[in-house]
Length: 503
Ligand SMILES: *[C@@H]1O[C@H](CO)[C@@H](O)[C@H](O)[C@H]1NC(C)=O
Ligand SMILES: *[C@@H]1O[C@H](CO)[C@@H](O)[C@H](O)[C@H]1NC(C)=O
Ligand SMILES: *[C@@H]1O[C@H](CO)[C@@H](O)[C@H](O)[C@H]1NC(C)=O
Image 1 (tube, helix red, strand yellow):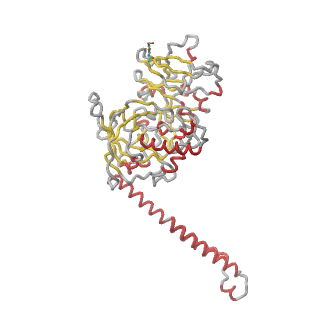
Image 2 (cartoon, rainbow, N blue to C red):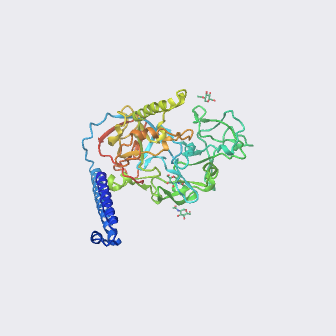
Image 3 (cartoon, rainbow, N blue to C red):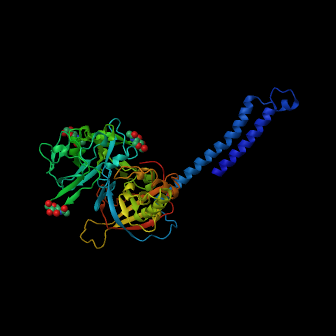
């Protein structure tokens, strides 16, 4: 079609040049014979030029649109039928090596050994989201990279999430540069304050004179000591407590509808240009975080099974007419689950190292050692993988409990439909531990060779987006996904094509 358009353009241009020259050489007022025969009025000239220009363009546009429509409807029929064209042999089974859950969209994730899979995605994954206080618009790493420094820790015994952020360095001159440590109970008995919907946890090392002295940092992971059942957190520096209340609060990880009724407000939030119902926590709960964001913010929650704030219907390749069934998710950008492959990441890192070594100052070893961590891509499931990028052709995968794991009675096979490749923006350039945005990588390297999807030519792809099959378990936990489980590819396709547009 581009060739056709180019042809038309050249043709138009030459005809136009010829005609205009001819008309101008022979002005309408001329009294010669030649002048008389060619004396078109200005209107006629305009009409000739317009016809010559517009007719082919309109024809082109009409053709382009109808052929695009035909292509789209083919894609739709194709996906529903799940016809397998020759996309090569099935790859060997591989194994799950890590599972990540990101309770708050764009904030630091949790690395877990196992997690429940719901139709909307993993339990606790992206069920919370930060929004602007003013108009309840979603906030992500794209708006503010340091959001990745906000950590959420999950405590299974109290079924609570504790959210912490580093107090902003500008308004917290550190009084001590030496690292400090403090210890808090790993399984606290929090006291619930219904007015603010907060759970207060008392630290065994905090003194009654100054219990708020603790500021939980984002960087160091807590160390769990099973003997004492405590978490030890190393603080890089301690700032003045009076000027910096800790950026920390604790909320129920699975709030009941009565808890939501008493402690949250139903709101409508905007994500990717669409409004969706959610529950907003009181401004008082998250007020200390306003300084971190540099603007008033609120935290909102979308329950995975609540019809009054139903999960968002999937769009793009997950829309009902493409996927063949209704499916939804809470606050991920697109699809309930993202799978990444170690083999592909390793291959990418080799390329990045080669590129950075050749471009950087040879004395700088830091550049040469630069490698991106999988957490930058925010997948839920990481598998070993086979050939790098073989995941590009996965169409259906099955997670199978390890046969040696007989104790795990909850384990049953889970099937996921791969909807599409995950097209990336520059979020992976942000280091999740420091929030520093790398000026080049992995974006530059990915752009060189991972613009592999016909449907989204200007973005590189990493990872595969998917939707769990519900089978007969509507509105239920679909199963438990564990590190060590086997992943089999059931079907492959050569026809993945990204349909632009968010959920
Ligand atoms: C945050 O970034 C997203 C994506 O770029 C944008 O759609 C959204 O409007 C931004 N939100 C705010 C509050 O600026
Ligand atoms: C855990 O705490 C106990 C009691 O304080 C201590 O003896 C033990 O060494 C600690 N374990 C680790 C791994 O630090
Ligand atoms: C919330 O609580 C109020 C007062 O108890 C009650 O009238 C209302 O029906 C409840 N709403 C929901 C959704 O449970």
